[in-house]
Image (cartoon, rainbow, N blue to C red):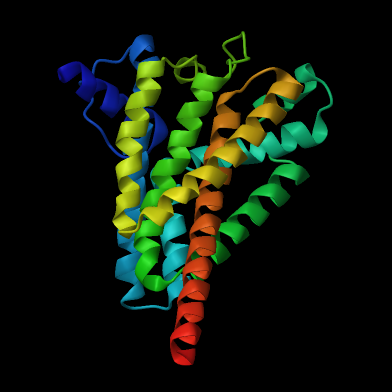
Length: 267
């Protein structure tokens, strides 16, 4: 149990800015194995962000509350995943060989592709959350943070890590994932969808998987696998996909209810 607690705290220490005890057992092995608890990291980050939304919505409009929630998420993670998405946009937008893509991805500077990409992503995220029914936004934020991190963990199992040097800050935690770690990540993730009280919301896993699968094929085609930045990109993209999927389910339910009302009025 102490070892598992060390792994959990290691995950929080690497993926967030949340303070953790300094006496945890740090090791390269723990950094590799802590990925199994990424959904728990998502649960905590998502829950705090959702709490900020709920509290802010009591005083401000839904739009302002959504923005404050998004700011909270960025602060809690230190924009870790957003930075990865921007780097991927720059690298794959400006590089045409594996070596060039990996070189650009290491560059700490943000180029035009990265700036435009992250701006559009954040705008889409804001409008998607803002369009969800206010009584479902808390559940949506928590679920999206958990499921998107599950997709990133899944990628660690599906693809090989491609950097062979020590130039990446993410290398210690992005080596191939064991099947039992992926299974545990699933067990920790899926219960969050019961928050909606409707099994229909489990369908968000399908478009999230499709987005993950498409990105994986793209990464494999160009660089033969993934990097830490690729994982951040998958987390960000699938988070937005979950929000859009929830919107689609709400639209379907609304249409279905409207149809049933029309049928009942006829008969």
